[in-house]
Length: 146
Image (tube, rainbow, N blue to C red; front, side, top):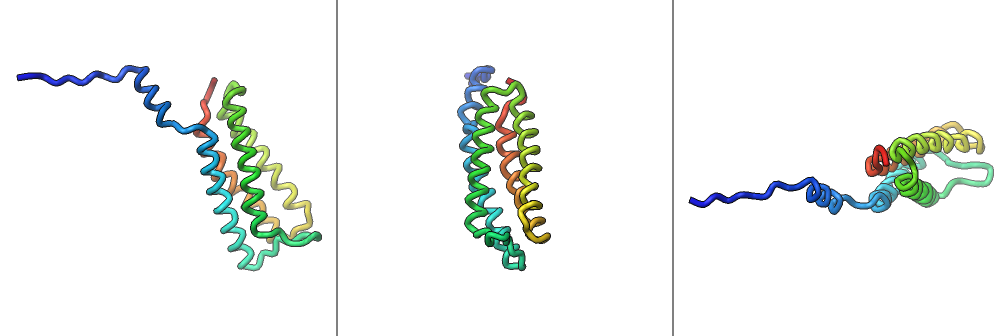
């Protein structure tokens, strides 16, 4: 009777397999950006249909503006994650703390640009929704320490 043996995976081969299966941060970031842009736009359309005006003294925010600005600022987050992955001593923590601070800062214009109360509250909620979609996706892809 012959015995069939299988080789035990070495630490090197296990790491190589995980590395090959792991996609780069920016690729996950693009997917999170597309998702956040779509979700924020759908929610803005729903809020608009419910009577939220999103209007300032210079006019209303166009619906496509929600998708565009969400995409632009999400891609800024992707770039930040890529840079922090290379230079920060604690990439994940640095990225998440920076994003929380920037998300809080992004709420200030909603209160100061002359939106009515309903518009300001919905805009602030949309900022938080976009951050909740993008930040965890990118943060999970960053190392705890370099």
